[in-house]
Length: 116
Image (cartoon, rainbow, N blue to C red; front, side, top):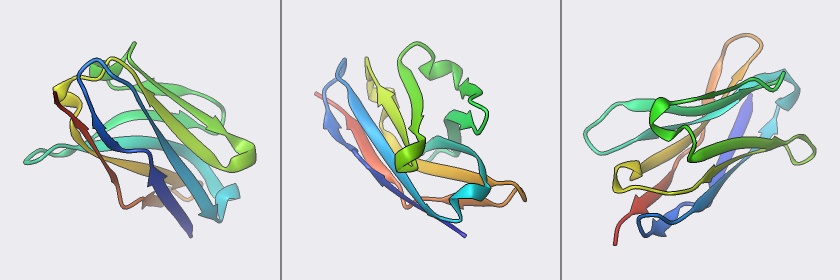
């Protein structure tokens, strides 16, 4: 089992920045991919960014050039640096992890609101 705890959400003005953090615990050595998804009101949950154990990065087209995913293996933490935020980035952001047996784990989510 893997447990994920997100932090760092909040209210930010358009054009501003936020950094989300996701701390993993439990059977962390089984994790081969971590990432961030988001879900806006009335919409489906979509992938934002992922990073594999080997360091491969993947981003949704809508955030390329604005968001950066990174990890600190020593802290078992994944980060999402979000710059040039837009109102359409408003959503609940969920941390996700997948283990070597392809089981998926979710955090409880953190709300990001981009508004003036």
